[in-house]
Image (cartoon, rainbow, N blue to C red; front, top):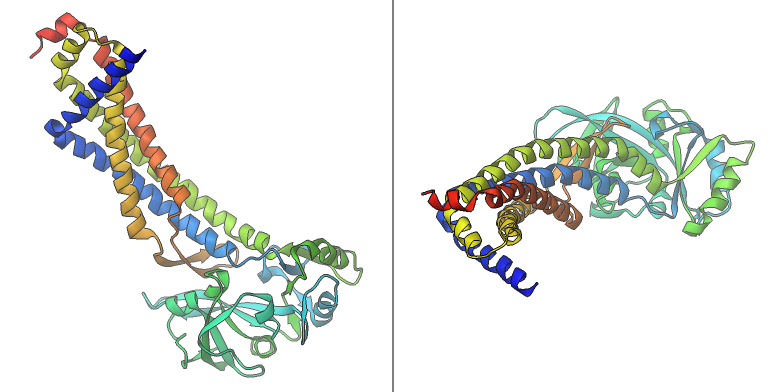
Length: 395
């Protein structure tokens, strides 16, 4: 057994030391695999970033109340009386001003993108004063809007992506002029793609009467969710559904993230097929160039097992080099890159940042390893099946 391992080590070292003699083919194989890894990481980092943007702002102790049967805030509707009943339910956190429940209005407006000047949908949310106690919102520039005034605070993602949202700017939406008085962050979550104002001001501006579309509620603890939910769903005066904010946002992002992931895997799979043929060609060339050396080793008593493993280790080494280079290139090129895409549930723009996660990098390098294994397997089998006498006569 010790002799067998010694043979594997000796032949593998010999193969690796001769790679510089075939550097053209070796570089081509490594670059092909690096390209596969870079594309896979780049595309899937879009899905990871979008999913993170939708989920990071969803806390387990924040509940969302919608009209029963509604899948999004756009299709929901609640009256002021219903919003009051929701705010009186048990299980809510409270501060000096009362229960932490914000009845909110959600409309979609058009604003020009900074990059292209073309219009895109932007969420415009009317909130109550308690919204700042419900959600983890931090003003990073300017100030909060004043209740009763036509003032807006813009999420950092929206302010970055759309023209006219700089602090101090005034924009006309419909028949009303609004002043941007602040920019806020929300943990890089979905709220950063929105504009906020006083719900009492937004209602008449968009002829919404005294209605709302949702209520965001801060629970006294995550464990209070069932108590809060049961109190609302068993109340005969209400026909509502209650979900945790984190679950709601995850569901909102599921369609797009699934599409991006499937698309990314498909594209990477097609590229992987090309890289596999490149690796096969490289290793077949390597075996053909060392026909006499391999035959000599076998004539000297080296077994077929060490020869097969040595060829596969060489292929794996090239694949790992390509995989690491591709992963590093994708990380520096894509991680943190700011972008925006459409949320298919609300047809509004969501600002997010590409996220190259450690799990994504590991998965991509595993793709490289698989390509390397298959790329070296068949040439390795060919190497040991070659008749020793015939191989020794080849030049």
